[in-house]
Amino acid sequence: MQPDPIGQERGYRILRHVADGGMGSVFEAELLGAEGFRKTVAVKTILARYAAHPEFVRLFIGEAKLVADLVHENIVQVYDLGRESERYYIVMEFVRGLNLEVFVRSHLDRGDPLPIELGAFIASRVCRGLDYAHQRRDPDGVPLGIVHRDISPKNVLLNFEGVVKITDFGIAKAREVMEQDEELLVGRIEYMAPEQATRRPTDARSDVYALGVLAHELLTGRLPDRGRWSLERLHRLGAAYPKPMAETRPDVPDDLAAIVERALQPDPGDRFQSAADMGYALEYHLYHKGYGPTNVTLRDYLREHFPDPAARVAELQAAPSAVADTVIGHRADTLFGHSLEDEAAD
Ligand SMILES: Nc1ncnc2c1ncn2[C@@H]1O[C@H](COP(=O)(O)OP(=O)(O)OP(=O)(O)O)[C@@H](O)[C@H]1O
Ligand SMILES: [Mg+2]
Image (cartoon, rainbow, N blue to C red; front, side, top):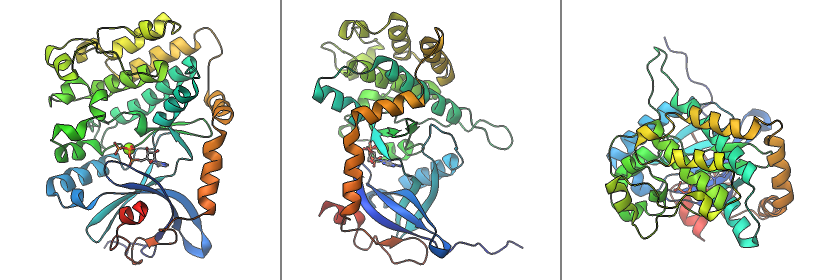
């Protein structure tokens, strides 16, 4: 006989709205346990129109189960998948920090050069997280075939301790069925490997390509240069980007530029064959001469360059948003009746 489940009274109290994304909103929340126990978590709600799409729900739940047990320093850990009034929400590790889009943009806004060695370091940690997920197998040793499919600056977070974390594992595949309309892919398509953009089969090497685009942006502040070509034409012809990274930023060391270019090859066979191989190349670049950047270097850099986000977080916590104190979860008051997104938009 199955033992009765425990923990049914658990709920999540929403503290503040963090951001809106393409599929819903992200909130900082607290997991409420017994005797006043609390744990800070992030709650990501999925828009109603997604939950109303059966094929989306099937893929979304399937992928959520696949990635549920990914536990790695460089991956945002998922704690729970909740459902409330036909709506879904994901509960995950809360990352106090910033995403790579903010990281890059703030350098550009201030006219500061992007830190080359730290950029390579960040990319190397993304490789570690990716490779861990790519290598996962089921209990019988059969590879799970996990591919992220949406590596982009908003899905890579830096916490203020200097740890790099990939988020949204297992979401892109379901999302793509909802977004067959190419317009919705704008923005993210820039990071998509040609095989993914043209809806051919993807594998770990598709994530390597996306990371190549991301690394290019981290090092130069710009996407790879396509000259006068459209991405669609580039992909259709299987052509590489016309201008090497060195032309945009000549102070990037040659070996590092070569790593990024290899990741960006249109034919998956010409790229690094695994995130581990790319990670090794990056770490060789970083460490073969001796001391290179670590989490501590990144932490110190963030402290120096981003004192503001920390202050902003504290400020927002002092002034709770309209959704503060709402509790979601089993046997708790329904929140989605008047949706989180509506509240957040107020
Ligand atoms: N676990 C988390 N902890 C803290 N902040 C997070 C967390 N997950 C996401 N965020 C923040 O919330 C923002 C919105 O995330 P979300 O995934 O909904 O959208 P996005 O990544 O911006 O775009 P997309 O819809 O394409 O994924 C992120 O950019 C990130 O800054
Ligand atoms: Mg995201």
